View 1 (tube, one colour):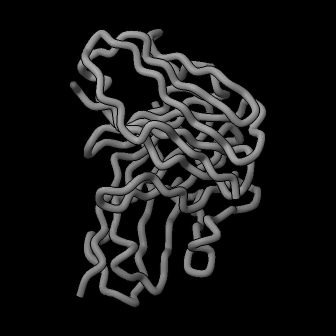
View 2 (cartoon, rainbow over the protein chains, first blue to last red):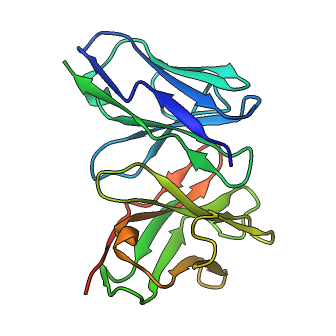
Length: 107
Length: 116
C-alpha cells in the first residue's frame, strides 16, 4: 500500500500569507498525485490533478508541484475561504490512498 | 452537469448490513470517462477510500474493508450501490459517492451511524 505523509498537520497563517503544504509518498507516483480541499459538512473538492494541473474553476492562487515521491501544494495568498482541510490522494496504485490531511487555520 | 446523490438509512444496528445507493444524473454511469466510487469520513477523522470501479472493468476495494464490502452497479437505473456487512461503531461516518477523473464530482454525502 502506498502511504502518503502530509506535513505539517496544522498550518496557522493570516489572510494574505503564503501557504506551503507537503505530501510525501512511500513509492514513486511519477506525477499522478491529486490534492483536495474539504470544508466542514462538505464534499471534498478537487483542486489539483497530475501534481500540477488545476481542476476546472480553481483559482490561480492554488498551484501544485513535484514528482516522484515529494509533492507540494502552494496557496500564494490566502483568502478567507481557503481556511480548510487539504488532502493529497494517489490513484496510481491499488489500493488508492489518502494522506492524513493538513489543516490550514486562521492566525 | 453531472450530479450524484447518496441515499440510504442513517442508522444501522451493529452486525447488520449498511446499504447505500448513489444515483447519477446529468451523465451515464456506463461512460468510459470516469471511475466511480465511494469514500467515507468518520467523525473527526480523515478521508478513507472504500472502493472504485470502471464500468465494464474490475472493482477494487480497500484491503481493510475487502472482506465486508461490495459495490454493485445498476446501469438501467444509472445507480451504483455500496453494501458493507457486519458493521460496528467504527463504520460510523459520512459516506460520499463520486465520479472520479480529472474533474471529480462528489455527492454531498450521507451520514450513517452504527448504534443499537
